[in-house]
Image (cartoon, rainbow, N blue to C red):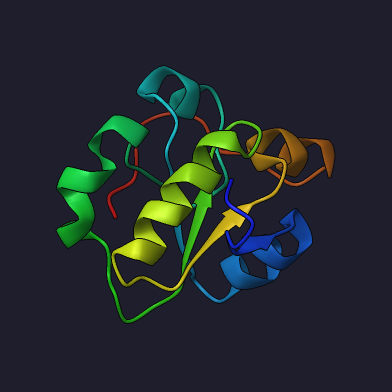
Amino acid sequence: MSQTTPEINVEQLARAAERQATVVDVREPYEYVAGHVPGAALVPMGQLSSRLGEIDRSRPVYVVCASGNRSAAMTDLLVASGYDAYSVAGGTAAWTRSGRPVETGTPARV
């Protein structure tokens, strides 16, 4: 993560998610189907740069992974591409540890 990577915590993500925020999970499909933030869309890290056009530029984007490392790198990519993007500190692991619900199964679309 760069020193300028915008970052939020899971509490802030929960508030954003209540407002139907755009949440992008950059983990691999097998990780996502095992458990993800409700409503998060799957766009694996290796595909994000080629799928930017699928993400609405007019809304903030919250990027989540397992622990926060991949999401920080992908947030930097999104910010450099003109998005208002935020990495979720601690990722899905922090979300789960906080006692918040997770969904399992088929990936949602962006």
